[in-house]
Image 1 (cartoon, rainbow, N blue to C red):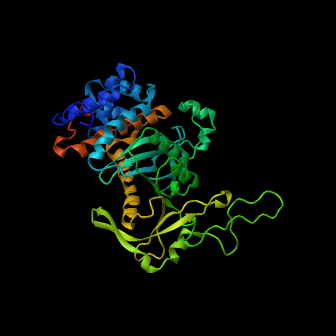
Image 2 (cartoon, one colour):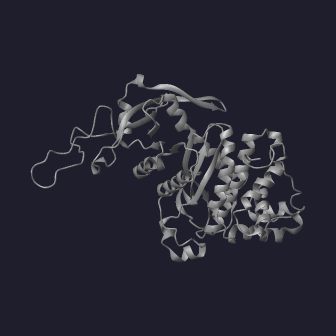
Amino acid sequence: MIQGSSVSPDAGSEIRFQAYVTEVSEVIGHADRVGPLRGYCTGLLLPGGRKSIEPMAARLDPLHVQATHQSLHHLVAKAPWDDQAVLDVVCRRAVPALQQSGSIQAWILDDTGVAKSGRHSVGVARQYCPPLGKKENCQVAVSLSLANQHASLPVAFQLYLPEEWAGDPERRRKADVPTEIRFRTKPEIALEQLARAVAADLPRGLVLADPAYGNDTALRDGITALGLLYGVGIQASTTVWPPGLEPLPPKPPSGKGRPARRPRREAGHEPVSAKQMAQSLPVAAYRTVSWREGSRGALQSRFAAARVRPAHRDTTLEVPRAVEWLLIEWPLGEDAPTKYWLSTLPEDTALEDLVSLVKLRWRIERDYRELKQEIGLDHFEGRGWRGFHHHASLCITAYAFLVAERCLFPPEHRFQAKLPGPLPGWTPRGAGAAARAP
């Protein structure tokens, strides 16, 4: 099974799965939670449409749906086990399997949304919903994934609590939001997840993120302070000092007051936007680079890279920011560049390597798609903080087993458990009435 277990790789997938779940169950407390944990993870992995509690209960034990429903519901919505402890076990067992297909290359920060109606589910608000690409009534959670070119796995997942929720005692009480949870921006949550991963000594990778995170200077500074490198998206308006142009030194002392210590700017000697920088480069600076094979052939575009000094609020610093890479994508036929990244990769990094690494962020989209479509991440129907995170942790637990099976074993040896399924004519509560014969 997953590397590190005492179970032989020659054992069947169900034996590997049982051993895996047994190990995870060691950190959830009471022995009476082990059966529901095994059942919940099994239900998430089995074929079927809805992965909310009642449909899974009907597939797991058709003759005792109500009793199975109650035990699964208690495990997820009520039992006070530690999500991080579960994810630590999952990570410890699944990451070595990922490394069988190649060393960890990236730590990917991102968030995903779950559309919701009403206002009572914890954290729900009208906000930008990543899967829909627009503002919608939804919950949003921040995640951190470890990835290489062949596989990836979320190792942290936390709900973003909007200010309107964080400051509303009544809504917090009804959703059982822990008292220590306060409003934090998504980049602040992401930085805490990175710090926890560093403390856990996980295999290092280049931190990747889209402009929603990469444009946050405090996050970039925090990543560097943790001893990590990054390759993060930024907006076209982000300012940089181009090659050959540096902040002016502090003003010479005048003999009055304290001497100036901060770099400065003046008219005609100012940083430029990333877009201006991109448009000032000669055509020869752009080269066509392929970064991976897609379903329709090699993925490629035109890129250029330059060594620049980020300039955001640098007049508040006594020392200018360090020089790093500005990577620009300007596809052939486009009137302007389409994407920009800042990266602290070494100065001798080849353009092809820069592109290949920052483009590895696509793996998080695959994680989210499979977690939702195959595992049921967005199928939880409860409203509380604990239930939301318990369900997400168990989805990641199930997904980690699936990822490890893919990395270590051919398809015919992967998880193949089968159960009888719901009794004929059974429908979950809330389902529409069956069509009647005329």
